Length: 272
Image (cartoon, one colour):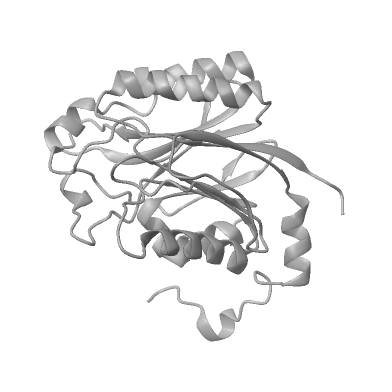
């Protein structure tokens, strides 16, 4: 097995309702990650702005285009420091009354190389995300970096196994879930269990990058294809750093051929 090493930094933060404060905090935590030679730095959901969904007008006001002033801050940093960065923002689209909950991957050269809009909005457990955000309409596609093929999902997407499998079949070696995972009964147990399941059933590394603070669980985590927790944060703001070997993806899939052994002759669900 030829090793393919990558250093991953996962930022766990407590965003507030000030976009400017969130940017300053993000850049400070990004500096901590790059000081430790991270290849890829991953931020959680609601990195840009964290507001109750009822504040729809305020969320829209805080939103901006995918390559607006907010994202350009991280593009400039990525270029100057040669680091890949996965951000989350409220993406404004001209003519729309609501923004998208979106992920943007920025490469070492400071260019956006992929964007994902959350397809499953959190209309559950008394929450109503669709009041403030539009749902994405595009099927998930892996993002490509020289270092890896990366599949990105956002929070409530974690409860749906189909997108993760699609991304794995399309070559993703790692699945990232940017999340503001709300606190509540059984929620932390479900967070860990679902992340482990996505790793084991797809043979990929799985990253859970979480918000923390009053409303959210924290417990950002890095999980191997075998379902082993390699690193886990607590409930406070922090940056966790993990060295991973992407060759473990190929090794696991040879031992447990979860991708090539699918019985599409029996359960191909296209068209249903």
